[in-house]
Amino acid sequence: MANNNRMLIKGNYAIAEAAIDAGCRFYAGYPITPQNEIPEYMSKRMPEVNGVFMQAESELISINLVFGAAVAGARAMTTSSSPGISLMQEGISYMAGCELPGVIVNVMRGGPGLGNISPSQSDYFQAVKPGHGDYRLIVLAPHNTQEMYDFTFEAFDLADKYRNPVMVLTDGLLGQIMESIELKRKKPELLNQKKEWALTGAKGRKGQRIVSLLMDPGALEKHNFHLQEKYDLIRKQEKRYEKFNITDDTEYLIVAFGTVARVSKGTIKLDKDKRIGLFRPITLFPFPYEELKEVAKNVKKIFVFEMNLGQMLDDVKIAIENSEKIEFYGRPGGGVPTSEELLNFILKRI
Amino acid sequence: MKEKIIYKKPDSLTDINFSYCPGCGHSTVHKIIAEIVDELNLREKIIGVAPVGCAVFAYNFWNFDVSEAAHGRTPAVATAIKRVLPDRLVFSYQGDGDLASIGMAEIIHTANRGENITVIFINNTNYGMTGGQLAPTTLLSQKTTTSPYGRDAKNYGYPVKMLELLSPLEGVKYLERVKVTDAASVIKAKNAIKKGFTYQMQNIGFSMIEVLSSCPANWRKEPVEANKLIDEEIVKVFPLGKIKDIK
Image 1 (cartoon, each protein chain N blue to C red):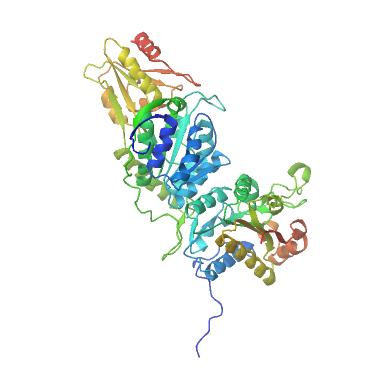
Image 2: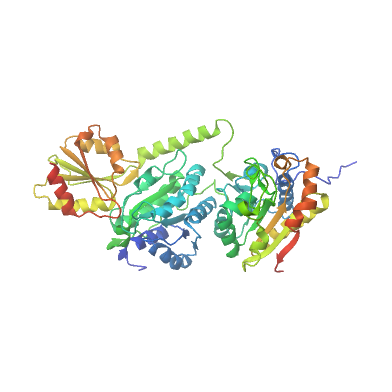
């Protein structure tokens, strides 16, 4: 594959290869379906690039290994699927508190509990409203294999830029399908940015520390305000979305992310009257509220489609004041809607 | 006449006063670690990982790089730092709740992989920071705030002997149990920790030094009485000396 930048690749492998291309040289993971291709691929690939592959004893350890690698200044990643991400929430919160960069990929499956291994979007909440404490992750939601590669690649620069964990939120369907994609094979912008804060031994300086424990009166409050300022900057600078088939004549707007956005594009092609457009949030945090509000202004109805029972729906309602215009259709527990199914729902409600 | 300096505060300690209770073993162990770091000239290449528990503020006292870790995850964090920076010296410093309870999986797998790190394990038979609750290392019949009638094995199980538990693992190269109740034992403890660091520098592999440490505040004892308890009773449950040394 070395000299050919175009390749047919499975979504999960695209994530792994993107991480390698982005300079990730530390990977820790634990087996869980439907993301097993990633640790398997990394166990072979990491030694080839003098990186570290570690099979952790649990997802709890995966994220703490990533924490440690980040402390030492490495670009690090872990991947898992929904129940495993739940286990990682402690470590992700510590990373956010300590302002450590790192990439976490969630190849979502059905829940709650052990659920099943079918594709799902039911971790929207735990991605955009994560674990304990007042913090945010940057959350990128790909909707095809190219984006699995691109967003994972870019996640490392974003993590370093803001010293914040970044989550790539995808699902078992995108993880398993194969598509032809273009590999970047270029150097990430911030790869060689010096990490003065990293712990590498106190050469010629006093010892420094990486901590989230701030016990002095007011210190933690101040730290939280500092984090919030950073999230505001991220809101200002990193919002991403796609407008598909939206014209002045668009009467009905679909709002969907990831796999469902892709299915919705099929729905739009099936619509003979060409009245339907799609607004696809790409960053789930920061969520493109204002942009959605603008697009939704003149449409008759807004259809929110998700593979859960209404999680992103909350954010759509924040964006759109007149929630009477909103119709929701969701498939929970591993159900994947078809384009026809979504079109039928729209036709019934208009 | 020119003064000859025969004793000074190690460079590897900051000027911040220890915040530990009078008689607590943590201060002694912190200091001997700092002395070893000075003696082996490691201040600019050592990275410590502090636990959650009484020693959570260890990073305030050491003048070298120290990271926080979530409760019990300390060996995982240390492992990753060492894997990323194999030419640095990396140690974790953990209490008995951190290491033997919530972090049991981390310590066993880190040891079993034979990670080339040094673990300093402070065993004071209780959760000091949170007010003296029962730890895996609490002695049978010992009263704590969560074993008010004393530890009985039927309800709470038996004291966990971590070194003996880790000893059969092939990745483990050096295990020694020490105490810091008097000058002679402090010197022994220092030698053991120094050996752990030296083994790591020689890429020998995983080592762990368990320090029996007093907790006068939670044991409700005067410091001298607390040390006496270690010397007379606790060593019977947690025998001192080398448990394993592959060299």
